[in-house]
Length: 323
Image (tube, rainbow, N blue to C red; front, top):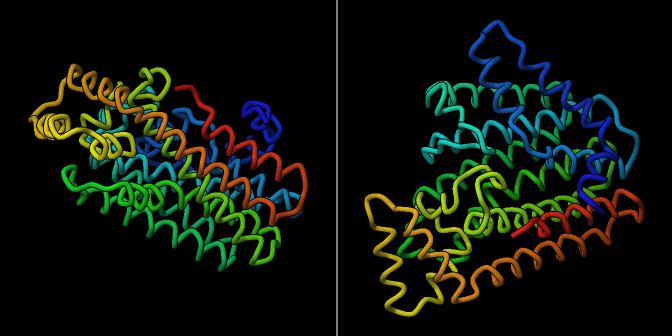
């Protein structure tokens, strides 16, 4: 299924979610309103709310609780973006200036904290202990993921460490979103678990492709300069693979580049050249497709319906973005 058609099919539901999201950003504090609306409206396809909505529709009609839960998931995601940019000294977010580059680190952290608090309060008011358990577990995993990334070093990094990080930082929220909507609408524990596993594998595939795009795409496609991850010394799957397959002289060259005080554009281009020579990006995309296929296979445990087809289409979209 084409992603734009999928989004169009839930347009009215996403409109309800948008109203919930922006409704909480009208406060008596101008800075909170301005910064919050800036980051929330900065683009993106609201994929986590889409996953939640489609998973919920599989088990019944949507009510107010679904829209509020979807807005809470998007608040949590947005809070992590604000905090990530501070931790990473990021200056761009979705092709625009990161909030920290406009309002400063302190404001970004505090507004992120506010969105996190609103997310939990929104879900608490629904009174569903399963939903609260799922989202609190996801939040703790995401925090651990940031710490794992912080302590990881490029000279000892492994692919398993990378996978652990993206499961914690990215995939767990896709997984939580997939389960939450179904839980609210009465899915059995087994069905909820199937959706959780689907969301987890979808999130892994999505993040692997995002990390591959960093080495091939221009700023207007991914919202940041080419090679931004390398300049930040993030060992994502493409770089981890290159460090593993590079010949001795090439590996030493890579490590020397990573140890530089300031990594330049020409250094990024040299790394991309090495990646081409070792077929790193085809390997990376094959890994993404493997997880996307696993996500689709897991859907067999769920009701055979249009929503299941839509979730399969999302998995295809995750790995079909241009490289």
